[in-house]
Image 1 (cartoon, protein in one colour):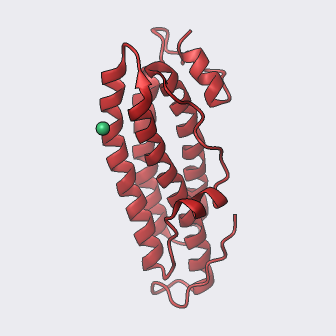
Image 2 (cartoon, helix red, strand yellow):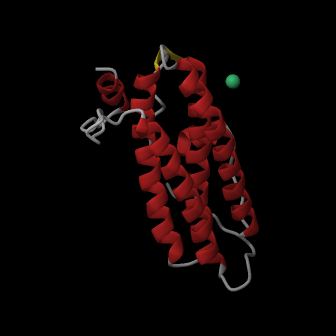
Length: 185
Ligand SMILES: [Fe+2]
């Protein structure tokens, strides 16, 4: 995904080519965060079963925090001289991942699938941290803070999937559907 941002100016000390690369990285992070907070609300609305209220109520603070992260990322891109695309059509055309695949389902099934969502997203944030660090520690610092919070949210999810022996009951699942199935076994 290369949008090839072409800023006319940027922050002091960076050149516009470097800023363009950073803005492209931030744009994909923005898409991932916008996708995530919508997906989290989808789970909030479609979770059922004995653990309904725990999961329903756990999700909303994550939605608020992830919306805040999207705002930070978009505004960092603006400060770098870029344009941030926040519309659904641009998101769907640019994203490198599939739409969330679970509808109305048991709370643990959603958490199994959400763990897979967080894994993909967090791996991408880590790569973005590495790439931005070569050029701009200020952007890297923003992403590092978000990485830490996202890893905490994944821990909240994983704690529900953990056995007394310390393993994840979805341990070898590679897809949302498979993780959802294994979580309720
Ligand atoms: Fe609600």
